[in-house]
Image (cartoon, rainbow, N blue to C red; front, side):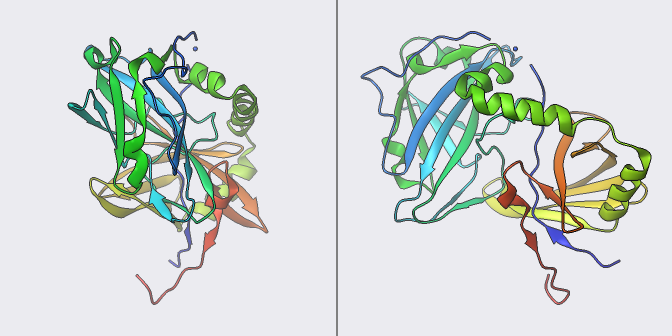
Length: 286
């Protein structure tokens, strides 16, 4: 069956709840370099692990005179210059109610442009105690190593929902309301139309897989089946809501894909519309 290719953005949303401490007014820190500005650093106290804490770092990338290609999964963190932690996606704790990109898909930030991104780290709880220095490194952003944080900067909050609200309440309120609307039920005729426009097509983008970049593909089949290929393939069933397609593997967290229609064509999109740009399918290509 003939197929079309679209850009993909995977967004997993789990709701949770408050309070925090910490401040950026600390002379032990350097929150900005030529290409990076740290906007917030938080610990999610709802993260359940006896040994590790979940740390969010929100930052703005400024390309300046250099094109930059990176993702949330390309940064490493060191505590006191010793213990190193690689950024990793926390699937049940994605900051979906913010304007910060969070994912393994490669984002291109071109000369003169800026871009908001979030990275998460699972850090030993002992390394989050006391007044300790935190440094960052990213192979695609040379001067990220100039950033210097301190564990005193960390705001400890109840969950990702409250973190998002503290970071930017205006954005949180808008995206939370939009999410509730997107997740509402629709009539069977509309569900059938969406399924018809999905089945037999696939959606893809480039993302980090370990230390390499690979394509992630989501393919839809009748009546409501899907297969995700990202290094390996996994399948399940999908459900259609007003603005969201829910992928369910039968175990583990669900994956939520935002979708919309433009000129009669269905697009799977992030809330930021540029991620929904159509790519023409080349039948002689790969």
